Image (cartoon, rainbow over all chains, first blue to last red; front, side):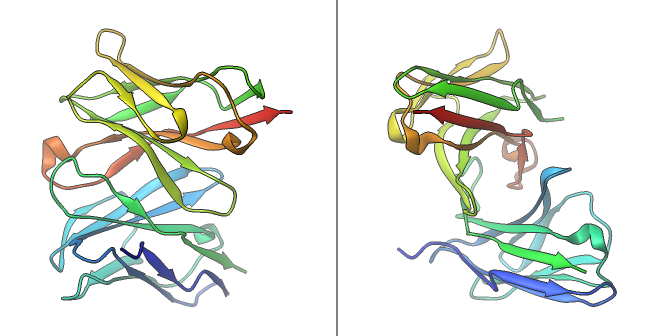
Length: 113
Length: 116
């Protein structure tokens, strides 16, 4: 099976812009979770989508949003970018069952100037 | 609430010597615990997971971890370090058992350096 893919891999934006990141899960997986990784805050959970519905949400402002399509692909959007949004954004997929292993993609590295 | 504490931010070992990466957890429920590894500029790879079965869990690349409820610990070990083990290691707890949702709480990571 192909692994989790994320596009783009690298992105440079300026403050105030918005950005959309994409994640394609492993075939058959219905859950996609998003995480932000920064040197200062480490890895933090953003949100999880399961069957096109947001099932769980971390403690991030409303500028961070996401959605999931019927084929389980997911997008994450960040509006009004701030310098502090510079990070590695990771998505992970799983079957969506409890206590299930999550498989991570390579990440999208976002730099906000 | 779930959380994990990785007791060492950096561990340095010589090639061929044992590796010990320490992790303590806090969970209101029976936890599911994981160790993930992240090589430079790469995503996260699962090393092993504990889900209330055997307390000694064997993972990939010779790593194993022991769940000790009395000590709330889940330390990662390997008998003999290899140069390719140099990476960042994350101890992780899942809250799936509680909420039915599927999100992970990460420790702050331990950077493992292997000296030739």
